[in-house]
Image (cartoon, rainbow, N blue to C red; front, side):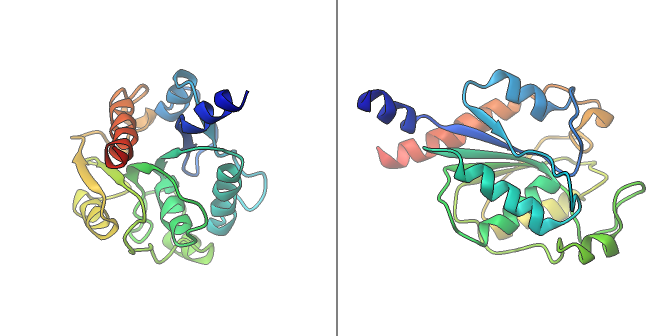
Length: 199
């Protein structure tokens, strides 16, 4: 029993961190969650849905329920949740895949929240401190919610490896994405990175 528990604690759990969207069956994060053997998803909020603090607390609560190593897989505003959460430093994680970050400091097109709404709910300014864990930032060349240069600047500030995923829009169904197989390769890379360091 003890050996089985130790083995389980060595296996990595992927924690999906969605943005502000509701559940979308065809979203790549949803599809990825259905394929991975050890995976959790930060649940949607029933109240204070636009509150950054409430979103970060939900992320922290989800992490507190996972034993063993964790890789975060965040998309859109979920990337900003991870950046805000990282300032707390409450729990060590193995790494994070940060996909198509939403640049909350630049006005979004309708019907997304306005900069003023985001500021009022605690999203601004974007934390710029170096992240205390390995990370990969996957940025699109034509993302309506973040210019590539802005995403590259975030990667530089956070110490993330920047990956150009081409003209992928916001990497969501509206941009023609359901499955995103490359996500698994990035997760594997983050999983191996710490194992290689330990070896």
